[in-house]
Image (cartoon, rainbow, N blue to C red):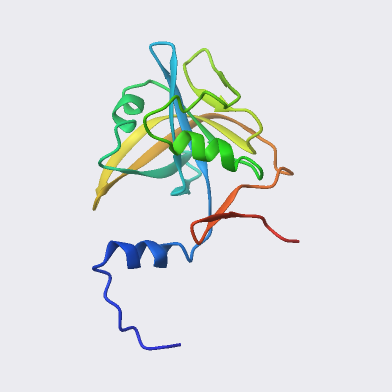
Length: 164
């Protein structure tokens, strides 16, 4: 290992360093006045079994999070292998993020992405400041899982596949 000489003051260097850690990709979505609203988030973490909690981190500059946070229920879909275009669509700006995305909504207003490996029906449990992000704790009310479906993996600023 080389000496730790780089200080984490340059956002580009820090982003590259964080890219060394592979993560799954989620879609956090809900209906807002009957229209689907959503975003992609790769900072998803299971937090607690009792109560059932997960977390996502949302940029403080997000224009989507203020719309989602006021909804009673949120759908969290853990995207599956091959859904990289879905992820890119949900991460896009200045266009209809759901134009080419297959989705459905629950009676409570949660929006789920078809073909995902896990669907969680959630509500906001708490929000905590985290630098230039907000750490959002979500309480899980219901779920459906497809454990044999391979996940979408994001690593080094690229989508990758798991190898057996």
